[in-house]
Amino acid sequence: LFVPDPLAAGMAVEVEGPQAHYLSRVMRVAPGGAVVLCDNTTGEWVAEVTEVGKRGVSLTVRERLRERENVPDFWLCAALLKKPNFDLVLEKATELGVRRIQPVITRRCVADKLNEERARTIVTEAAEQCARTALPDVAEPLRLEALLKAWPEERTLFFADENGGAPIKEAFAIHNAPAALLVGPEGGFDDAERAAVRNHPQARAISLGPRILRAETAVIAGCASWMAMAGD
Ligand code: SAM
Image (cartoon, rainbow, N blue to C red; front, top):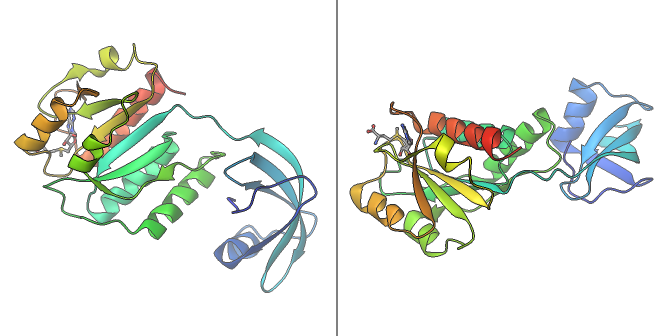
């Protein structure tokens, strides 16, 4: 479980609300039982259940199991999609180990805002399911123009362009600097957006193959390729 405060051996932790419900009703923990806690800063710890009450579950932190992970410095910049599809993007990008998820608003986006509370819940549940010891950052949505304007010069922006680009095996293999993948919305990028990205000094157009993938498929294909070739 991810808990908000940094953990240390011997520390008492009170888990309440949905997490307490999950521990007591789903996991049916009892005093003496062990629970794995993550604090997104020091790493993963085992904690002993000391009490299961109506309001919450009390635990004492025992020992650290794993240091906080050091995932590849890879960001996903994904155009906002219709809710269930963007939920999938958040979940799969978390499982695939991205360090940061930057929602992007482009002219053809059907959705133009993100429920950040809900996004954080999806990302946290995905991180717990795949046993990550850190949560990816979920940034506030940015318009594409603003993203390009503020783009950090040391980071390559691999632009998944369905109109064509460098093959991934070429583009990703030689790359060991900070990187990011940009994926468009259901309707793709318009010509002006495509030109703006292609003219950006840090951008490199890449192809995800000869077929037109759904945006969420492109996210999974791009992130999985990165993790396989240059990342984890
Ligand atoms: N413009 C597309 C069309 O003609 O139907 C629709 C966009 S596609 C559904 C969504 C996004 O996935 C694209 O903007 C692109 O970022 C990415 N994508 C899909 N297939 C791709 C491919 N073969 N190579 C690179 N990117 C791709």
